[in-house]
Image 1 (spheres, rainbow, N blue to C red):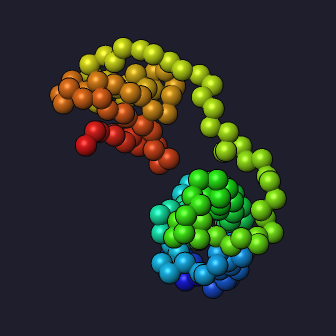
Image 2 (tube, helix red, strand yellow):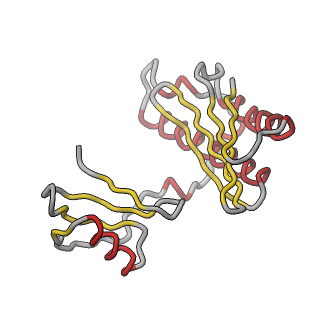
Length: 182
């Protein structure tokens, strides 16, 4: 794989770059041929938290993982573990659903050591609770106030200006985002 390692608010040292490449090279065993697109690695430091975000674009699938911790190297280790779980999950889905040639199944190696059945908590997609409620027409600022009042990280509302369903959410940086319909 080819890596594009960059830093935000932190200089990327040779030692950090070597560590990232060494750890991500563990993923090569899952692929028949290395991915043609560059793997994007972003390392950042924000308020003492060391974050690592890795994106691996593949045909038909984008593998992405992000982790924040007090130690940059621990963040890299956790991100690689998350990516391995994602690859195993996609491989399991591919083996189940896509049996035809040229599908996502052809991206992953067949004689893979990690193909032992592992119970992944992400694989259990059971809905455990369902809520119904009326969407009150309100503006974005009022929706943010309601979200903060109930202590949630997002809030669904009927936008009084556009007459459409929108979602406000709290971003990791503490600011707010708005999701609108297209």
